[in-house]
Image 1 (cartoon, one colour):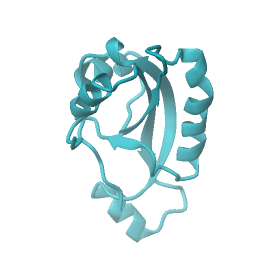
Image 2: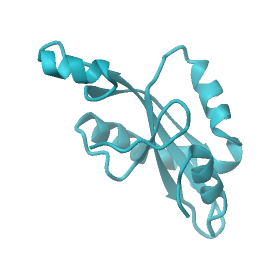
Image 3: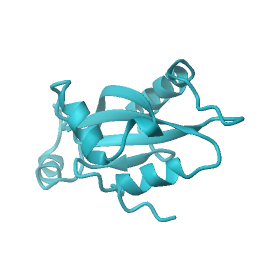
Length: 134
């Protein structure tokens, strides 16, 4: 299945043989204080900068019905975000992973994003569309 939106990902996760828990790290884009003029121009055009984790959460697939739900829930925390990174944990024997089991992998995601290792996560923008980094 091609993932062309967050809702595609949610649908795909719900259709897996084993129940899934989705892991989310919400980030904000910023420009370093020592950015060059070229870096500033790229950032102002919507490219470049750094991504800083703001908040994270895990959800069973049945706790979300759409990207709009995720967006609305995240807005209650009062922090604007630019990109949300998503990963999935698979259950076993028909039992979904618990939030407690997701704590270490979620912290691992935060740590990986801080150092730019984002290749194993799916990033989505504020409209729920996948983002490709170049």
